[in-house]
Amino acid sequence: MVQTEVELNEKLARWTGFERNSVPTRNREGKYVAKWRYPDHESYTNVPDFVHSLDACFKWLVPKLDQLSITVWDNVQMYAMVYRDEHDHMGYEAEDKNKTPALALCKAIEKMIDSAK
Image: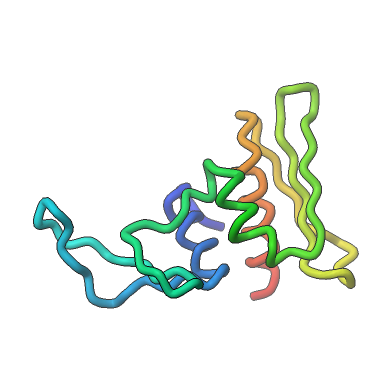
């Protein structure tokens, strides 16, 4: 299990096909930063903010899933269930009590990734 949202975001990026360049480059302030190569072969300083953006999740993560369910319980909790493929009858679920659907989805996908190890 990942400890921080930044680590979770990077773990999901790698699972999706993003690659961190081994040689950092300088940004406008002269600081060294790592660049990420996106699956579409573009390079950017950061990966999408999966844990806070459903748009990023649906663009990059969801196409790798076979099934997805997101549910709101009593307008208090977000719940996500993901399936690896059509033969995966168990599914992987997670919830976020702060009503963050993207984070709940990311946590469920992380459980699925970790189960394959």
